[in-house]
Length: 358
Image (cartoon, rainbow, N blue to C red; front, top):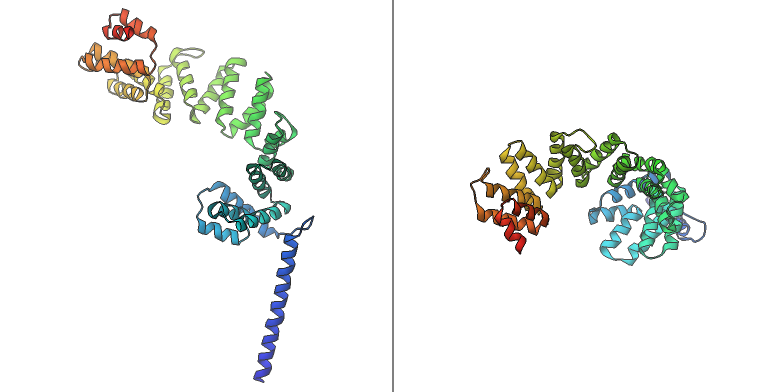
């Protein structure tokens, strides 16, 4: 009886192993075959691969341990990342094999990744084939890169990319129509990019509304957004508008807000100096000196010049001609116009006359 039981267990194990082996062999043959054959992936596996690609695209500093684990789960992009760390040809072959099959299974991010890989590997034709596949699967970025390979300023792929929500494509279209002076079309595409917080799109929109469409309210709206997207030029421009009263009602408080933002958040040397000047006119001397000094430290000549004048006149500080001279030299070094020095010389500032003679 005991011998019979052992025989039955052995038979079950033998035939089970045989069946598993057959399935594994069949899968391998199907996976490695050329032509139209491919290894079909179940839906849950496709979802996993898509999430894996998305995670690795968003996170560049993934541990080697996690990459190895994901690679063993047949996520091709993780194998490719692992290859970059270990420089193993076996890993590269594995990565390309997995991702090629993933792309054939309509995982668009894998098509895009393969296109990028072959483009960097100086194989544009192969890259293009994967970008075409990705674009057909509605990858906006794949369509965009396909358009770049075609080197056409406007084509069906760029338009499709924009319609799929890839905002860089919308900007390229907007910039193209701007150069063609078709401002209505340009605005249409640039607005899509600006809505996605692409700074250069918002800034170009402000330029169109300011100089071409003459709509100051819209220009200020896009300048303000550009400023909040960390364009110091936009902050300074809108600040100048309110400070000078050009195109808008003069408002020193609004001007201060934009100059101060440029200084505090974007380390704009000119923003710091202008903030200091406004505080001086508000008789807030502590903040004035603080911001003028920051402007000078960030190599803005007007900040250094303002500090020099305060030291010469004895305003805020006691008179200190030697220190004033040091700041004046810095002002000249950082680009204060000679016409300003000449004006100061004629106004009786002897230190400025000495600087003019050098």
